[in-house]
Length: 222
Image 1 (tube, one colour):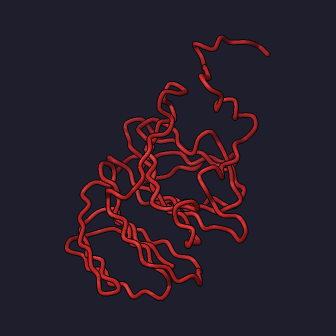
Image 2: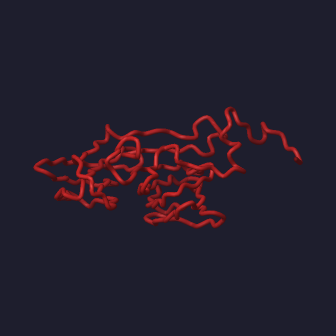
Image 3: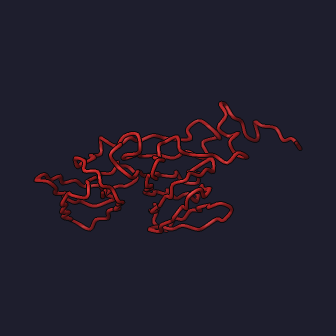
């Protein structure tokens, strides 16, 4: 199976006698357009201007009806709002996952880490590998991807592999919005769903209701 996600530009998808032409000027301010097809589908993509697409694919013997996700079909949520002084506020767009596409062997979405904030937070892991592809605005921006205990600098058009069971979190430098596509394959007998995030025990206190941090939380030696 394959999925093409339009990051920016203008393209026309053609498949099974159907076609859809769409433009996306801003990967920050607009939802994506995605075509998701089984292995049997023949797809043609025509670009009308310089365009960028992310492609996800994996093995899948299931033959399903191709799905064209228009901008209005994409689920968009704001995570981290109203907690931890909004230091981990980010926009999460889910194209499809283990709950919404039972016929698929993969998951696809986007995240925008707001300038100076964290995402993939609190630090967590899952048995499934994950790939990130980054864009920044302004494009000279940068961020930090923390895999286990190792911080790595990420810049515009970098990619990162999160290995199975590898703890991960990341942050955008102040002033720079950090956008990334996230792609996850399902494992046999273990499909990824939104609850498949296993938070590091030393940090899961941040998930408590009405959690407080300094200076509201007063310093204690214990």
